Amino acid sequence: MHPILFFNKSVGSLVAPAAVWVILWLLLLVLDDALSLGNLALLMVLANAVASMWLRPTLSVVTSAVAVTVFNWSFVPPRFTFAVDIQQDVILLITMLVVSIVTSYLMELKRRAIDREAQHQLQARLAQEHVKTQQLRNTLLTSISHDYRTPLTTVMSSASVIMEQAGRVPSEKICQLATLIFDQAHQLHRMTSNTLQLARLDSQSVHAQRNWESAEEILGTVYLRAQRNHPQRKLETKISKNLPLLYCDAILINQLLDNLIENALEHSQSHTSLLIIARYADNELLISVQDHGCGIPDEWKHRVFDIFQRVESLSAPADGGARWGIGIGLAVCRAIAEVHKGSIDISDTPGGGATVTLRLPVHEQPLHPSELPR
Amino acid sequence: MSTQILLVEDDLALRQALKQSLEMDGFIVDSASTLREARTFLQEDLNKKLPLSRIVIVDLGLPDGDGSILVRWVRDHSALPVLIISARQDDHSKVHLLDLGADDYLVKPFSINELKARIRVALRRQSPIAADVRDLHIGELEISLTRHLVKRRGVKVHLTPTEFKLLAKLVRQSGKVVTHRQLLLEVWGEEYVEHVHYLRLYMAQLRSKLETDPAAPELLLTETGVGYRFCEPGSFAG
Image 1 (tube, chains in turn green, red):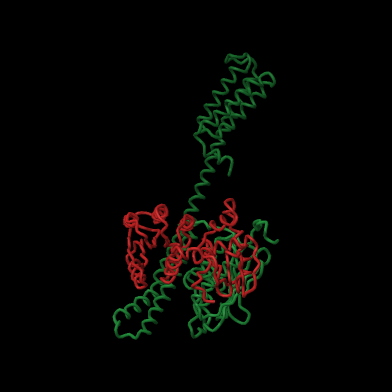
Image 2 (spheres, chains in turn orange, red):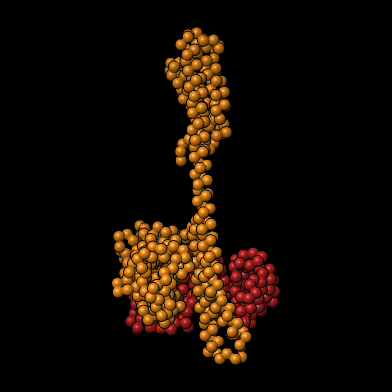
């Protein structure tokens, strides 16, 4: 912080300048015999300059006038009178007074300039935050109106078929409809978690709850969950041995990887497999999710991470895997990566498809418990 | 004696859905929608001094206060199993409540099957005969806590004393979540309760010795942000 800005904050407080003056007068009394009158006067000018950092200019001028008068009475010969013997001492006293006044005035100018600058910065920041909040709110509203209504319609119409046609619908049809309701509800759950997470990460009021986590463990959990939700899909993992521990928020990283895998599954045909790779290189932990879907055109590789961008593929595959970046899934991924000072990018899978890679910085590892082999 | 469940949840729709589903499985379900109601109900229960087979399921967000107050109250007055329902994955109060002795937790939205699995585990722990798991066969694994022995496909697996202590703690409570703090306290002691990285390293070692595929564990499950769970023996398919 700027030193004058610091002093500026306590303008109006009289404790500091009073202390400065007390120290000065004690010093003057102690050094009375040791120093010449000129040096004593210089000490006083210095004290006045320091004291004026806290004082309003009028008060500062008054104090310096009083100080010069008292200095004259107590130190300038003939001592203990207001008279002045030598003409030079008159110049000394006048110079002291003028220097003190000029210092007070300069301090005030500087103080005002800093005040103005701080105010400008505050206004600029508020304006910027306002724009960001507006953008996010609009995005969330669009998300709710656009992406929520479709699954909700499916849920409502499936449920009403069961309600209205109860006796007439064969039981396997009811089971199909119930499955549809379940899947759509699951989709709504994912979108809700993502929307809430994005709002939370953006507000910057929520801090990540970091701890030492094992990448292998996180990937194990994510893998099991994905396999449970998509038993018909083939998921493979290739995880290097002895990966370093990550210092991260495991819940956030879980959500990020869930999104990547769900996205990849959604955008590749159901007979293709998915590969999850984790490895360590150059002080970074790299986790890739590799699919063999329709891939992402180069010009879209950055934009899919922006909220509400989708890629409408020219040659949409039969099972509808053409839309990328559904709603805000990938935007949440990027936000989570950034909270961890990491990054995320998309490249082509050799032979076709997309590979999304998350890079997380690796921190200095904690000490091993003594029993562990090193 | 069929098991009674007290379901404390303020949302009417969820209360009805859970009640219906649990009653189909033969449970007797009472419900309460506020802290007050739940406390009055349980107080009457305690006054009767009858042997009770009851489980309490508590939602943390209740209209007249936080469900954690009820969890603490139940722990102070009885040993009834308590399951927590929380609305958020990153709700840290649930970890704290597990440390205080709540039995398990579920995050909304959960499936009814998950809930039933947790109830089964809580019931098993409550029954005096089977409360203490000491020896079990699970898949190709044979674990005997009494004989200090672990075998995989009939071959003895060498575990260090610390690894065995960690495994034993999880097996004794199999099916139930055990928090990081509870594990660190049991295996390493009070001054190590913050050293979560010990668990990461030892769990990796245990998995490499016991799991068929350590990258897709079936026995030693991770409860993200909370702790670990040894899979419920009855649920193991492999």
